[in-house]
Image 1 (cartoon, each protein chain N blue to C red):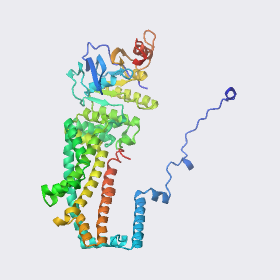
Image 2: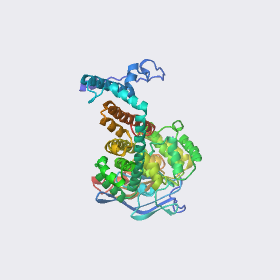
Image 3: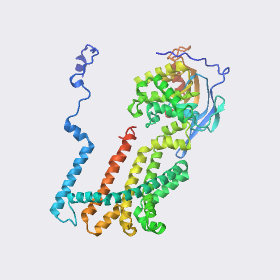
Length: 269
Length: 293
Protein backbone atom coordinates (compact mmCIF):
# COMPACT_ATOMS: atom_id res chain seq x y z
CA UNK A 1 0.00 0.00 0.00
CA UNK A 2 1.11 3.45 -0.79
CA UNK A 3 0.53 6.21 1.64
CA UNK A 4 0.73 9.39 -0.36
CA UNK A 5 2.03 12.41 1.37
CA UNK A 6 -0.30 15.33 1.12
CA UNK A 7 1.22 18.32 -0.58
CA UNK A 8 0.89 21.50 1.38
CA UNK A 9 -2.61 22.74 0.97
CA UNK A 10 -4.48 25.57 2.55
CA UNK A 11 -1.75 27.89 1.35
CA UNK A 12 -3.63 28.98 -1.73
CA UNK A 13 -2.86 32.58 -0.90
CA UNK A 14 0.84 32.02 -1.13
CA UNK A 15 0.96 29.91 -4.32
CA UNK A 16 -0.83 30.81 -7.53
CA UNK A 17 -3.34 28.06 -8.29
CA UNK A 18 -2.84 25.95 -11.41
CA UNK A 19 -6.57 25.75 -12.05
CA UNK A 20 -8.91 28.39 -10.79
CA UNK A 21 -12.67 28.02 -11.01
CA UNK A 22 -14.54 31.16 -10.05
CA UNK A 23 -18.29 31.32 -9.59
CA UNK A 24 -19.03 28.92 -12.43
CA UNK A 25 -22.65 28.26 -13.35
CA UNK A 26 -23.27 25.57 -15.93
CA UNK A 27 -26.45 24.85 -17.81
CA UNK A 28 -27.33 22.31 -20.44
CA UNK A 29 -30.41 21.65 -22.47
CA UNK A 30 -32.36 18.39 -22.28
CA UNK A 31 -35.12 18.39 -24.83
CA UNK A 32 -37.19 21.40 -23.85
CA UNK A 33 -35.67 22.18 -20.46
CA UNK A 34 -32.62 24.09 -19.38
CA UNK A 35 -31.02 22.25 -16.49
CA UNK A 36 -28.70 24.07 -14.15
CA UNK A 37 -25.94 21.59 -13.43
CA UNK A 38 -23.81 23.71 -11.11
CA UNK A 39 -24.51 27.05 -9.49
CA UNK A 40 -21.65 29.47 -8.73
CA UNK A 41 -19.06 26.86 -7.87
CA UNK A 42 -15.57 28.08 -6.95
CA UNK A 43 -12.40 26.23 -6.09
CA UNK A 44 -8.65 26.33 -6.68
CA UNK A 45 -6.45 23.41 -7.66
CA UNK A 46 -2.76 23.72 -6.87
CA UNK A 47 0.06 22.06 -8.72
CA UNK A 48 0.44 18.37 -7.78
CA UNK A 49 -2.95 18.35 -6.08
CA UNK A 50 -5.07 15.23 -6.16
CA UNK A 51 -8.27 17.21 -6.15
CA UNK A 52 -11.50 15.24 -5.86
CA UNK A 53 -14.97 16.41 -6.83
CA UNK A 54 -17.33 14.34 -4.69
CA UNK A 55 -21.08 14.28 -4.64
CA UNK A 56 -24.16 12.18 -5.35
CA UNK A 57 -25.47 11.86 -8.88
CA UNK A 58 -27.06 15.04 -10.13
CA UNK A 59 -24.59 17.35 -8.40
CA UNK A 60 -23.05 18.37 -11.70
CA UNK A 61 -19.55 17.08 -10.96
CA UNK A 62 -19.14 15.38 -14.33
CA UNK A 63 -20.57 18.41 -16.12
CA UNK A 64 -18.12 20.59 -14.24
CA UNK A 65 -15.24 18.37 -15.32
CA UNK A 66 -16.43 18.47 -18.94
CA UNK A 67 -16.55 22.26 -18.76
CA UNK A 68 -12.95 22.31 -17.55
CA UNK A 69 -12.17 19.93 -20.40
CA UNK A 70 -13.59 22.58 -22.73
CA UNK A 71 -16.64 20.65 -23.93
CA UNK A 72 -19.07 23.10 -22.37
CA UNK A 73 -18.99 26.85 -21.82
CA UNK A 74 -20.13 28.29 -18.48
CA UNK A 75 -23.02 30.74 -18.55
CA UNK A 76 -21.50 32.62 -15.63
CA UNK A 77 -18.11 32.80 -13.97
CA UNK A 78 -14.70 31.92 -15.36
CA UNK A 79 -12.17 29.11 -15.38
CA UNK A 80 -8.45 29.77 -15.63
CA UNK A 81 -5.75 27.21 -16.27
CA UNK A 82 -2.30 28.57 -15.41
CA UNK A 83 -3.76 32.05 -15.71
CA UNK A 84 -5.26 31.53 -19.18
CA UNK A 85 -8.97 31.30 -19.83
CA UNK A 86 -10.12 27.81 -20.73
CA UNK A 87 -11.50 27.59 -24.24
CA UNK A 88 -11.82 24.61 -26.54
CA UNK A 89 -10.85 21.05 -25.59
CA UNK A 90 -7.10 20.60 -25.82
CA UNK A 91 -4.27 18.23 -24.98
CA UNK A 92 -3.14 20.36 -22.02
CA UNK A 93 -6.14 18.87 -20.17
CA UNK A 94 -5.98 15.13 -20.88
CA UNK A 95 -9.25 13.40 -20.14
CA UNK A 96 -9.83 9.90 -18.79
CA UNK A 97 -13.46 8.88 -19.16
CA UNK A 98 -15.52 6.33 -17.31
CA UNK A 99 -16.52 4.46 -20.46
CA UNK A 100 -14.36 1.61 -21.72
CA UNK A 101 -14.98 2.67 -25.32
CA UNK A 102 -12.71 5.70 -24.95
CA UNK A 103 -9.94 3.71 -26.65
CA UNK A 104 -10.03 3.75 -30.42
CA UNK A 105 -10.99 0.17 -31.27
CA UNK A 106 -9.13 0.29 -34.60
CA UNK A 107 -5.79 0.96 -32.96
CA UNK A 108 -3.63 -1.26 -30.80
CA UNK A 109 -2.77 -0.30 -27.24
CA UNK A 110 0.48 1.25 -28.39
CA UNK A 111 -1.06 3.03 -31.36
CA UNK A 112 -3.80 4.51 -29.19
CA UNK A 113 -1.10 6.36 -27.27
CA UNK A 114 0.94 7.15 -30.37
CA UNK A 115 -2.21 8.55 -31.95
CA UNK A 116 -2.79 10.91 -29.02
CA UNK A 117 0.79 12.16 -29.13
CA UNK A 118 0.95 12.67 -32.90
CA UNK A 119 -2.62 13.96 -33.45
CA UNK A 120 -1.99 16.68 -30.90
CA UNK A 121 1.30 17.51 -32.59
CA UNK A 122 3.18 16.82 -29.39
CA UNK A 123 5.76 14.41 -30.80
CA UNK A 124 6.76 12.92 -34.13
CA UNK A 125 5.97 9.29 -34.75
CA UNK A 126 9.30 7.84 -33.66
CA UNK A 127 9.48 9.64 -30.36
CA UNK A 128 5.79 8.98 -29.80
CA UNK A 129 6.36 5.22 -30.10
CA UNK A 130 9.20 5.41 -27.62
CA UNK A 131 7.20 7.38 -25.10
CA UNK A 132 4.11 5.22 -25.54
CA UNK A 133 6.07 2.08 -24.74
CA UNK A 134 7.47 3.75 -21.65
CA UNK A 135 4.01 4.60 -20.33
CA UNK A 136 2.54 1.22 -21.27
CA UNK A 137 5.28 -0.31 -19.19
CA UNK A 138 4.46 2.07 -16.35
CA UNK A 139 0.88 0.85 -16.14
CA UNK A 140 2.09 -2.77 -16.33
CA UNK A 141 0.81 -3.65 -19.80
CA UNK A 142 4.12 -4.14 -21.64
CA UNK A 143 2.95 -7.54 -22.89
CA UNK A 144 -0.17 -6.09 -24.42
CA UNK A 145 1.30 -3.22 -26.44
CA UNK A 146 0.28 -4.91 -29.70
CA UNK A 147 -3.19 -5.99 -28.59
CA UNK A 148 -6.42 -4.45 -29.79
CA UNK A 149 -8.61 -2.93 -27.06
CA UNK A 150 -11.46 -5.43 -27.48
CA UNK A 151 -9.17 -8.21 -26.28
CA UNK A 152 -8.48 -6.46 -22.96
CA UNK A 153 -10.42 -6.53 -19.70
CA UNK A 154 -12.15 -3.42 -18.40
CA UNK A 155 -9.41 -2.67 -15.91
CA UNK A 156 -6.72 -3.03 -18.56
CA UNK A 157 -8.60 -0.66 -20.88
CA UNK A 158 -8.71 1.95 -18.13
CA UNK A 159 -4.98 1.46 -17.56
CA UNK A 160 -4.38 2.18 -21.24
CA UNK A 161 -6.56 5.28 -21.04
CA UNK A 162 -4.57 6.48 -18.02
CA UNK A 163 -1.28 5.73 -19.78
CA UNK A 164 -2.50 7.65 -22.82
CA UNK A 165 -3.51 10.68 -20.76
CA UNK A 166 -0.27 10.62 -18.76
CA UNK A 167 1.89 10.25 -21.86
CA UNK A 168 0.52 13.61 -22.97
CA UNK A 169 2.13 15.12 -19.88
CA UNK A 170 -0.78 17.51 -19.56
CA UNK A 171 -0.92 20.42 -17.16
CA UNK A 172 -3.81 18.70 -15.45
CA UNK A 173 -5.29 15.22 -15.70
CA UNK A 174 -9.09 15.14 -15.71
CA UNK A 175 -10.54 11.83 -14.56
CA UNK A 176 -14.28 11.29 -14.78
CA UNK A 177 -15.11 8.34 -12.50
CA UNK A 178 -12.48 6.23 -14.27
CA UNK A 179 -12.91 3.25 -11.96
CA UNK A 180 -16.69 3.36 -11.50
CA UNK A 181 -17.38 0.61 -14.04
CA UNK A 182 -14.80 -1.77 -12.55
CA UNK A 183 -15.37 -4.54 -10.04
CA UNK A 184 -14.45 -3.75 -6.43
CA UNK A 185 -11.25 -5.83 -6.36
CA UNK A 186 -9.90 -4.28 -9.55
CA UNK A 187 -10.95 -0.83 -8.40
CA UNK A 188 -8.91 -1.07 -5.20
CA UNK A 189 -5.84 -2.18 -7.13
CA UNK A 190 -6.28 0.63 -9.67
CA UNK A 191 -6.54 3.21 -6.91
CA UNK A 192 -3.28 2.00 -5.37
CA UNK A 193 -1.58 2.00 -8.76
CA UNK A 194 -2.77 5.51 -9.54
CA UNK A 195 -1.30 6.74 -6.26
CA UNK A 196 1.94 4.93 -7.06
CA UNK A 197 2.08 6.70 -10.43
CA UNK A 198 1.41 9.98 -8.68
CA UNK A 199 4.33 9.34 -6.33
CA UNK A 200 6.57 9.03 -9.42
CA UNK A 201 5.74 12.25 -11.21
CA UNK A 202 3.48 14.25 -8.87
CA UNK A 203 1.09 15.13 -11.66
CA UNK A 204 -1.94 17.31 -10.98
CA UNK A 205 -5.21 15.43 -11.18
CA UNK A 206 -8.83 16.46 -10.90
CA UNK A 207 -10.79 13.33 -10.04
CA UNK A 208 -14.56 12.96 -10.10
CA UNK A 209 -16.21 10.24 -8.03
CA UNK A 210 -19.40 9.48 -6.15
CA UNK A 211 -17.67 7.06 -3.77
CA UNK A 212 -16.68 8.46 -0.39
CA UNK A 213 -13.99 5.81 0.29
CA UNK A 214 -12.50 6.42 -3.16
CA UNK A 215 -12.44 10.18 -2.57
CA UNK A 216 -10.65 9.73 0.75
CA UNK A 217 -8.20 7.24 -0.75
CA UNK A 218 -7.35 9.21 -3.89
CA UNK A 219 -7.63 12.83 -2.86
CA UNK A 220 -5.57 15.15 -0.77
CA UNK A 221 -8.31 17.75 -1.11
CA UNK A 222 -12.00 16.99 -1.55
CA UNK A 223 -14.69 19.34 -2.81
CA UNK A 224 -18.16 18.29 -1.66
CA UNK A 225 -21.03 19.16 -3.95
CA UNK A 226 -24.73 18.96 -3.20
CA UNK A 227 -27.23 18.23 -5.96
CA UNK A 228 -29.96 20.09 -7.87
CA UNK A 229 -28.22 22.27 -8.77
CA UNK A 230 -24.63 21.47 -7.81
CA UNK A 231 -23.37 23.84 -5.13
CA UNK A 232 -20.22 23.76 -3.07
CA UNK A 233 -20.88 22.37 0.37
CA UNK A 234 -17.40 22.12 1.75
CA UNK A 235 -13.77 21.73 0.79
CA UNK A 236 -11.86 19.41 3.09
CA UNK A 237 -8.45 17.77 3.34
CA UNK A 238 -7.84 14.06 3.23
CA UNK A 239 -4.90 12.15 4.64
CA UNK A 240 -5.41 9.19 2.32
CA UNK A 241 -7.04 7.00 4.95
CA UNK A 242 -10.28 7.28 6.87
CA UNK A 243 -8.90 8.87 10.04
CA UNK A 244 -10.47 10.42 13.10
CA UNK A 245 -10.50 14.20 12.96
CA UNK A 246 -9.84 16.57 15.84
CA UNK A 247 -13.49 16.35 16.83
CA UNK A 248 -13.30 12.56 17.03
CA UNK A 249 -15.30 12.04 13.85
CA UNK A 250 -14.20 9.76 10.99
CA UNK A 251 -13.56 11.58 7.72
CA UNK A 252 -16.12 9.39 5.97
CA UNK A 253 -18.75 10.12 8.61
CA UNK A 254 -17.98 13.80 8.37
CA UNK A 255 -18.40 13.76 4.59
CA UNK A 256 -21.61 11.80 4.94
CA UNK A 257 -22.93 14.37 7.42
CA UNK A 258 -21.86 17.35 5.33
CA UNK A 259 -23.45 15.97 2.19
CA UNK A 260 -26.74 14.84 3.64
CA UNK A 261 -27.50 16.98 6.73
CA UNK A 262 -29.92 19.22 5.06
CA UNK A 263 -33.37 20.52 4.88
CA UNK A 264 -33.98 18.86 1.56
CA UNK A 265 -36.46 16.11 0.94
CA UNK A 266 -35.63 12.60 -0.23
CA UNK A 267 -36.15 13.73 -3.78
CA UNK A 268 -32.99 15.78 -3.51
CA UNK A 269 -30.72 12.81 -3.03
CA UNK B 1 -36.55 -24.87 9.79
CA UNK B 2 -35.13 -24.55 13.25
CA UNK B 3 -34.13 -28.20 12.99
CA UNK B 4 -32.07 -27.39 9.95
CA UNK B 5 -30.38 -24.67 11.89
CA UNK B 6 -29.61 -26.98 14.75
CA UNK B 7 -28.23 -29.59 12.38
CA UNK B 8 -25.73 -27.09 11.01
CA UNK B 9 -22.30 -28.55 11.70
CA UNK B 10 -19.01 -26.77 11.66
CA UNK B 11 -17.02 -28.03 8.70
CA UNK B 12 -13.27 -27.87 8.46
CA UNK B 13 -11.79 -25.36 6.00
CA UNK B 14 -10.16 -26.79 2.91
CA UNK B 15 -6.98 -25.30 1.50
CA UNK B 16 -5.58 -26.59 -1.77
CA UNK B 17 -1.87 -26.65 -2.31
CA UNK B 18 -0.96 -25.02 -5.62
CA UNK B 19 -0.53 -27.61 -8.35
CA UNK B 20 -0.18 -27.56 -12.09
CA UNK B 21 -1.76 -30.84 -12.93
CA UNK B 22 -3.43 -30.30 -16.26
CA UNK B 23 -4.28 -33.90 -16.97
CA UNK B 24 -7.64 -35.16 -18.13
CA UNK B 25 -10.41 -32.62 -18.02
CA UNK B 26 -8.10 -29.83 -16.94
CA UNK B 27 -6.93 -29.60 -20.53
CA UNK B 28 -8.42 -26.32 -21.72
CA UNK B 29 -8.04 -26.73 -25.46
CA UNK B 30 -8.84 -30.08 -27.06
CA UNK B 31 -8.52 -30.41 -30.85
CA UNK B 32 -11.76 -30.78 -32.78
CA UNK B 33 -12.52 -33.97 -34.70
CA UNK B 34 -12.16 -34.04 -38.50
CA UNK B 35 -15.86 -33.69 -39.34
CA UNK B 36 -16.39 -31.02 -36.72
CA UNK B 37 -13.58 -29.04 -38.32
CA UNK B 38 -15.00 -29.49 -41.81
CA UNK B 39 -18.45 -28.42 -40.64
CA UNK B 40 -17.02 -25.38 -38.89
CA UNK B 41 -15.57 -24.13 -42.18
CA UNK B 42 -18.04 -21.76 -43.85
CA UNK B 43 -16.49 -22.18 -47.27
CA UNK B 44 -16.99 -25.94 -47.13
CA UNK B 45 -20.61 -25.62 -45.99
CA UNK B 46 -21.42 -23.14 -48.73
CA UNK B 47 -19.60 -25.19 -51.38
CA UNK B 48 -21.65 -28.25 -50.48
CA UNK B 49 -24.81 -26.16 -50.85
CA UNK B 50 -23.67 -24.94 -54.27
CA UNK B 51 -22.96 -28.48 -55.43
CA UNK B 52 -26.41 -29.60 -54.28
CA UNK B 53 -28.08 -26.67 -56.09
CA UNK B 54 -26.16 -27.45 -59.28
CA UNK B 55 -27.21 -31.09 -59.05
CA UNK B 56 -30.85 -30.11 -58.60
CA UNK B 57 -30.58 -27.81 -61.61
CA UNK B 58 -29.07 -30.57 -63.74
CA UNK B 59 -31.71 -33.13 -62.76
CA UNK B 60 -34.62 -30.73 -63.29
CA UNK B 61 -33.35 -29.60 -66.71
CA UNK B 62 -32.88 -33.20 -67.83
CA UNK B 63 -36.39 -34.08 -66.72
CA UNK B 64 -37.78 -31.00 -68.47
CA UNK B 65 -35.71 -31.75 -71.55
CA UNK B 66 -36.23 -28.38 -73.24
CA UNK B 67 -33.00 -26.48 -73.73
CA UNK B 68 -34.83 -23.44 -75.11
CA UNK B 69 -36.55 -22.84 -71.79
CA UNK B 70 -34.12 -24.27 -69.28
CA UNK B 71 -30.77 -25.65 -70.42
CA UNK B 72 -28.90 -28.13 -68.24
CA UNK B 73 -26.15 -27.11 -65.83
CA UNK B 74 -23.58 -28.98 -67.87
CA UNK B 75 -24.51 -27.26 -71.15
CA UNK B 76 -24.45 -23.88 -69.36
CA UNK B 77 -20.99 -24.58 -68.00
CA UNK B 78 -20.00 -25.77 -71.46
CA UNK B 79 -21.25 -22.50 -72.98
CA UNK B 80 -19.43 -20.59 -70.26
CA UNK B 81 -16.12 -22.25 -71.04
CA UNK B 82 -16.70 -21.80 -74.74
CA UNK B 83 -17.45 -18.13 -74.19
CA UNK B 84 -14.28 -17.80 -72.14
CA UNK B 85 -12.36 -19.69 -74.81
CA UNK B 86 -13.49 -17.43 -77.64
CA UNK B 87 -12.83 -14.39 -75.47
CA UNK B 88 -16.42 -13.16 -75.77
CA UNK B 89 -17.21 -13.40 -72.06
CA UNK B 90 -13.91 -11.98 -70.76
CA UNK B 91 -14.25 -9.06 -73.18
CA UNK B 92 -17.84 -8.40 -72.17
CA UNK B 93 -16.96 -8.85 -68.50
CA UNK B 94 -14.00 -6.50 -68.66
CA UNK B 95 -16.09 -3.86 -70.41
CA UNK B 96 -18.87 -4.13 -67.86
CA UNK B 97 -16.42 -4.08 -64.98
CA UNK B 98 -14.56 -1.00 -66.20
CA UNK B 99 -17.85 0.84 -66.63
CA UNK B 100 -18.95 -0.33 -63.20
CA UNK B 101 -15.78 0.86 -61.52
CA UNK B 102 -16.04 4.26 -63.18
CA UNK B 103 -19.60 4.68 -61.96
CA UNK B 104 -18.85 3.25 -58.51
CA UNK B 105 -15.84 5.44 -57.84
CA UNK B 106 -17.60 8.57 -59.12
CA UNK B 107 -20.56 7.70 -56.88
CA UNK B 108 -18.24 7.29 -53.89
CA UNK B 109 -16.65 10.68 -54.50
CA UNK B 110 -20.06 12.37 -54.59
CA UNK B 111 -21.15 10.42 -51.51
CA UNK B 112 -18.01 11.53 -49.65
CA UNK B 113 -18.62 15.18 -50.56
CA UNK B 114 -22.27 15.05 -49.58
CA UNK B 115 -21.57 13.27 -46.28
CA UNK B 116 -18.72 15.61 -45.41
CA UNK B 117 -21.02 18.57 -46.02
CA UNK B 118 -23.72 16.90 -43.94
CA UNK B 119 -21.37 16.21 -41.04
CA UNK B 120 -20.08 19.77 -40.72
CA UNK B 121 -23.34 21.68 -41.04
CA UNK B 122 -26.93 21.25 -40.08
CA UNK B 123 -28.22 22.44 -43.42
CA UNK B 124 -25.95 19.86 -45.06
CA UNK B 125 -27.51 17.14 -42.93
CA UNK B 126 -30.97 18.35 -43.91
CA UNK B 127 -29.96 18.35 -47.57
CA UNK B 128 -28.62 14.80 -47.36
CA UNK B 129 -31.73 13.55 -45.58
CA UNK B 130 -34.10 15.24 -48.01
CA UNK B 131 -32.24 14.15 -51.13
CA UNK B 132 -31.92 10.59 -49.87
CA UNK B 133 -35.60 10.43 -48.99
CA UNK B 134 -36.44 11.66 -52.49
CA UNK B 135 -34.05 9.68 -54.62
CA UNK B 136 -33.19 6.51 -52.73
CA UNK B 137 -36.54 4.82 -53.47
CA UNK B 138 -36.27 5.75 -57.15
CA UNK B 139 -34.94 2.79 -59.15
CA UNK B 140 -31.85 3.95 -61.00
CA UNK B 141 -32.92 2.28 -64.18
CA UNK B 142 -36.00 4.53 -64.25
CA UNK B 143 -33.62 7.44 -64.83
CA UNK B 144 -32.06 5.85 -67.90
CA UNK B 145 -34.46 7.35 -70.48
CA UNK B 146 -33.77 10.79 -69.02
CA UNK B 147 -30.03 10.12 -68.93
CA UNK B 148 -30.15 9.13 -72.60
CA UNK B 149 -31.64 12.52 -73.43
CA UNK B 150 -29.05 14.36 -71.34
CA UNK B 151 -25.92 12.41 -72.12
CA UNK B 152 -26.84 10.61 -75.32
CA UNK B 153 -26.06 7.01 -76.12
CA UNK B 154 -22.84 5.88 -74.52
CA UNK B 155 -20.93 5.50 -71.30
CA UNK B 156 -22.00 8.87 -69.91
CA UNK B 157 -25.61 7.82 -69.47
CA UNK B 158 -24.67 4.53 -67.84
CA UNK B 159 -22.27 6.23 -65.46
CA UNK B 160 -24.98 8.70 -64.54
CA UNK B 161 -27.41 5.99 -63.49
CA UNK B 162 -24.61 4.12 -61.71
CA UNK B 163 -23.76 7.21 -59.67
CA UNK B 164 -27.40 7.46 -58.73
CA UNK B 165 -27.41 3.80 -57.70
CA UNK B 166 -24.32 4.12 -55.48
CA UNK B 167 -24.57 7.62 -54.08
CA UNK B 168 -27.61 7.38 -51.81
CA UNK B 169 -26.88 3.99 -50.31
CA UNK B 170 -23.30 4.92 -49.43
CA UNK B 171 -24.08 8.45 -48.20
CA UNK B 172 -27.00 7.30 -46.08
CA UNK B 173 -25.09 4.49 -44.39
CA UNK B 174 -21.97 6.57 -43.85
CA UNK B 175 -23.91 9.40 -42.31
CA UNK B 176 -25.85 6.99 -40.10
CA UNK B 177 -22.49 5.58 -38.96
CA UNK B 178 -21.23 9.05 -38.12
CA UNK B 179 -24.33 9.75 -36.10
CA UNK B 180 -24.12 6.57 -34.04
CA UNK B 181 -20.46 7.08 -33.15
CA UNK B 182 -20.08 7.05 -29.38
CA UNK B 183 -19.94 10.51 -27.78
CA UNK B 184 -16.92 9.36 -25.78
CA UNK B 185 -14.90 8.75 -28.94
CA UNK B 186 -15.91 12.18 -30.23
CA UNK B 187 -14.70 13.79 -27.03
CA UNK B 188 -11.46 11.80 -27.18
CA UNK B 189 -10.84 13.12 -30.69
CA UNK B 190 -11.44 16.69 -29.56
CA UNK B 191 -9.32 16.19 -26.46
CA UNK B 192 -6.30 15.46 -28.61
CA UNK B 193 -6.89 18.59 -30.65
CA UNK B 194 -8.44 17.08 -33.78
CA UNK B 195 -10.68 19.40 -35.76
CA UNK B 196 -12.51 19.35 -39.11
CA UNK B 197 -10.59 17.27 -41.64
CA UNK B 198 -8.31 15.42 -39.21
CA UNK B 199 -11.32 14.64 -37.04
CA UNK B 200 -13.29 13.22 -39.96
CA UNK B 201 -10.40 11.10 -41.24
CA UNK B 202 -8.98 9.89 -37.93
CA UNK B 203 -12.10 9.52 -35.79
CA UNK B 204 -15.36 9.60 -37.76
CA UNK B 205 -14.44 7.37 -40.70
CA UNK B 206 -12.74 4.53 -38.79
CA UNK B 207 -15.35 4.78 -36.02
CA UNK B 208 -18.18 4.50 -38.52
CA UNK B 209 -16.42 1.89 -40.64
CA UNK B 210 -18.90 -0.96 -40.04
CA UNK B 211 -21.72 1.22 -41.41
CA UNK B 212 -19.55 2.54 -44.23
CA UNK B 213 -18.73 -1.01 -45.26
CA UNK B 214 -22.43 -1.89 -45.30
CA UNK B 215 -23.01 1.14 -47.52
CA UNK B 216 -20.22 0.08 -49.87
CA UNK B 217 -21.69 -3.41 -50.16
CA UNK B 218 -25.23 -2.23 -50.77
CA UNK B 219 -23.97 0.38 -53.23
CA UNK B 220 -21.98 -2.26 -55.07
CA UNK B 221 -25.00 -4.54 -55.38
CA UNK B 222 -27.22 -1.69 -56.60
CA UNK B 223 -24.63 -0.62 -59.14
CA UNK B 224 -24.13 -4.14 -60.45
CA UNK B 225 -27.86 -4.69 -60.93
CA UNK B 226 -28.38 -1.32 -62.51
CA UNK B 227 -25.55 -1.82 -64.94
CA UNK B 228 -26.73 -5.19 -66.21
CA UNK B 229 -30.24 -3.79 -66.61
CA UNK B 230 -28.94 -0.69 -68.40
CA UNK B 231 -26.91 -2.80 -70.79
CA UNK B 232 -29.89 -5.00 -71.51
CA UNK B 233 -31.97 -1.95 -72.32
CA UNK B 234 -29.59 -0.09 -74.55
CA UNK B 235 -26.50 -2.18 -75.13
CA UNK B 236 -27.92 -3.28 -78.45
CA UNK B 237 -28.57 0.16 -79.77
CA UNK B 238 -25.13 1.42 -78.89
CA UNK B 239 -23.44 -1.73 -80.05
CA UNK B 240 -20.93 -1.68 -77.20
CA UNK B 241 -20.71 -5.05 -75.61
CA UNK B 242 -20.97 -5.63 -71.91
CA UNK B 243 -22.36 -8.66 -70.13
CA UNK B 244 -25.93 -7.42 -70.33
CA UNK B 245 -25.54 -6.99 -74.03
CA UNK B 246 -24.01 -10.50 -74.30
CA UNK B 247 -27.10 -11.90 -72.60
CA UNK B 248 -29.45 -9.84 -74.75
CA UNK B 249 -27.80 -10.73 -78.04
CA UNK B 250 -27.69 -14.46 -77.29
CA UNK B 251 -31.33 -14.38 -76.28
CA UNK B 252 -32.19 -12.84 -79.65
CA UNK B 253 -30.42 -15.70 -81.34
CA UNK B 254 -32.15 -18.21 -79.05
CA UNK B 255 -28.80 -19.46 -77.74
CA UNK B 256 -30.21 -20.07 -74.31
CA UNK B 257 -27.20 -21.88 -72.75
CA UNK B 258 -25.18 -18.76 -73.62
CA UNK B 259 -27.80 -16.61 -71.91
CA UNK B 260 -27.44 -18.75 -68.81
CA UNK B 261 -23.67 -18.60 -69.11
CA UNK B 262 -23.90 -14.80 -69.12
CA UNK B 263 -26.13 -14.85 -66.05
CA UNK B 264 -23.76 -17.30 -64.36
CA UNK B 265 -20.89 -14.90 -65.00
CA UNK B 266 -22.86 -12.12 -63.33
CA UNK B 267 -23.49 -14.40 -60.34
CA UNK B 268 -19.85 -15.50 -60.14
CA UNK B 269 -18.69 -11.87 -60.16
CA UNK B 270 -21.12 -11.11 -57.36
CA UNK B 271 -19.97 -14.08 -55.30
CA UNK B 272 -16.33 -13.13 -55.80
CA UNK B 273 -16.79 -9.52 -54.76
CA UNK B 274 -18.91 -10.42 -51.74
CA UNK B 275 -16.99 -13.44 -50.50
CA UNK B 276 -13.44 -12.52 -51.40
CA UNK B 277 -13.04 -8.76 -51.66
CA UNK B 278 -15.52 -7.51 -49.06
CA UNK B 279 -14.84 -10.49 -46.77
CA UNK B 280 -11.12 -9.74 -46.80
CA UNK B 281 -11.70 -6.07 -46.05
CA UNK B 282 -14.00 -7.04 -43.19
CA UNK B 283 -11.55 -9.47 -41.70
CA UNK B 284 -8.69 -7.01 -41.86
CA UNK B 285 -10.68 -4.16 -40.35
CA UNK B 286 -13.91 -4.35 -38.39
CA UNK B 287 -13.47 -7.96 -37.27
CA UNK B 288 -9.88 -7.47 -36.26
CA UNK B 289 -10.90 -4.39 -34.29
CA UNK B 290 -13.73 -6.24 -32.56
CA UNK B 291 -16.31 -3.84 -34.00
CA UNK B 292 -18.18 -6.63 -35.76
CA UNK B 293 -18.46 -10.30 -34.91
